[in-house]
Length: 134
Image 1 (tube, helix red, strand yellow):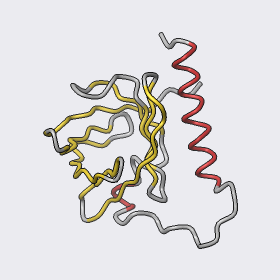
Image 2 (cartoon, rainbow, N blue to C red):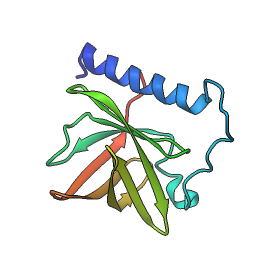
Image 3 (cartoon, rainbow, N blue to C red):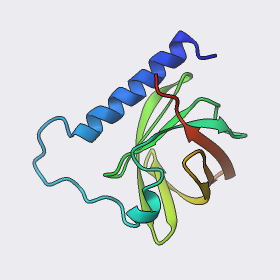
Image 4 (cartoon, rainbow, N blue to C red):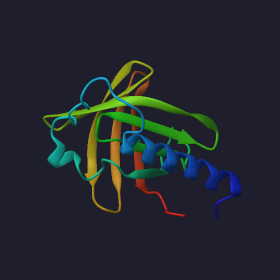
């Protein structure tokens, strides 16, 4: 059962995602085009995903892959982090703290997004599911 803190973190992630998607603020240049391969990537883009299980990522951590290439990651145990992501020729790359990680998409359905991230410390499997809407 979600705690009040879990609900607060989820609400912040959803609000941040909505603000970024709405394009709040003025832009001096046109919006970046979506990362390549959007047809294949469309199944996980602009959705709030939560970690169901992973040996190295806390359950409940939220991931959002915004269409313009921003990656939002937040959990009840850490501050929200912004990174980048790209998708090119079936290769997903997540960039956190300036470090790019190649990521294999193991499965992608409406109910599950399972990835294998090739981090410097080794490969890490992450099973994500759509975050519940409150």
